[in-house]
Length: 72
Image (cartoon, rainbow, N blue to C red):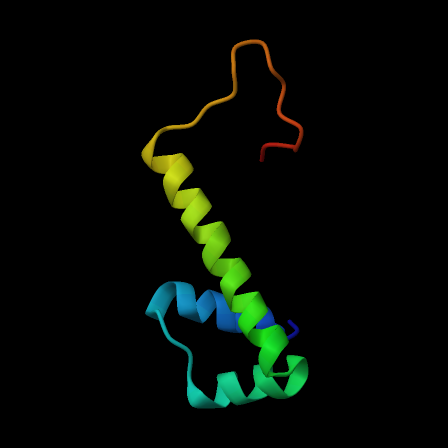
């Protein structure tokens, strides 16, 4: 099994621990650069916030509407 790319690994770790290790941060920063890394972290936070909001208000599709994305 291949190791998880630093972007996914750091996102997964930050979602569980709310922080990443200095080594993982350094690898992700070297791979993406500081500005892109911050953009990725902000994007992941935005998606997490959107998911929490939609879950909190039990957001559903309107009656008769079909989802645009496949549902597992």
